[in-house]
Length: 279
Image (cartoon, rainbow, N blue to C red; front, side, top):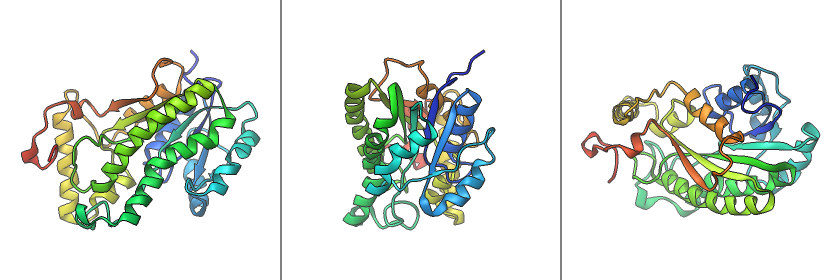
């Protein structure tokens, strides 16, 4: 039986470790028949290539890509054509960053967040979704799919602070990207709003101190309890499978949307006394 991505080529960004959601998305994409191309932060390419060797199938060396660099973005289509002359059919944008002043246990108070740091968080976490779409568009085949990673920003989550604001901006950017790439090549653009998964990013939010780790565990336990079907923070394949489904042809009429892959917790009853939910 053919896989969901049989005969397709997809670009995966955001692999940092083998716990990254992007890594698991790449693995599932390969299992579903896709040829996978990866990118990485230029200064970490050797590390990313070593991590990529743990994927089920070999991939070409990672393309160096700093999404804030117009030079890197300008040459990306040419590099993609070299690796995939037939064009690419899907892209995963799994990139986000906020300075420590804005997110995590060492952040300043929300109202004291420095403007330049907030601008940096917006540039990397939201604006880059549009810049990546612009860069890959010449190399994308008609009817393809762009998928970005979201975390439901409708509530004010502890420690998330200005990253929550950046994610809210990402949701708006997605709607505009969907209009642009849809009009250009009938390409779909959607976000996956994932529940908490134990990744390097999650550790950056909670920190390593005992009290901070306790807060993260509270969030994880709460999420599992709030989910009608349960939620396992140690199982990134649940999110990876949903990403691959969005990259496939099986949701041809869905674009500009947010698909929640969080066990239903974000749509269930919140309990503010647990320290989470709406403020």
